[in-house]
Image (tube, rainbow, N blue to C red; front, side):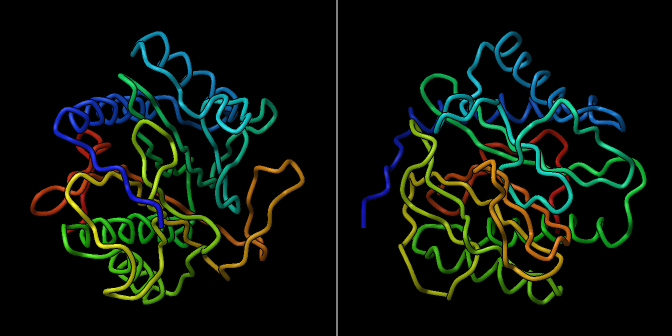
Length: 259
């Protein structure tokens, strides 16, 4: 098992700045998301904002030969949805926008669900419960806890609410590189897995399906969809393990945190 890269105080401060800037991107995007916008419009607006306004780098562009600055995953798309000039958001859609940003040599990674127009109560419930599941995992983070504790907290909350956890994709360590150790599964057993240490930084990003957990990869080699064509939702934050708990490095201004 490869070692996680522990961040010192200076490195954490740089990651905190990347996270703050990324949070501001979502604040900007909140004002742009509406019926009729294309997913390529979203990509282009965000790229310009990151580069021109924030003087930062969209870290996803060029990563693994990916051409775009973010992922837009609509309705039954689980993750890695590719922006398109022909895909217009319509009333009733739910869409995950997943953005990465690098500043000062360190990367932050976060995603947010958007409800477009009038969304069905069932879709809204899925989005809300996925957000709460992410926070159940975040609250399990502290020195001496395990990765299994995070996965168990998410999985138990999700299954209690009648949904399923996607198992093929997971959170990941992050810092100077987009993907570092450890892998952060969104299911698991309490007390199992790697022990968390102060200075670890990683994402928690559960993908939760309305139906079965099974997924399929489309022919484009990126887009992952639910096998049963039911809805999927995802939220993501970048987390640091602190001396007595956690810090959410990508926390957005006025973000509603579940009690």
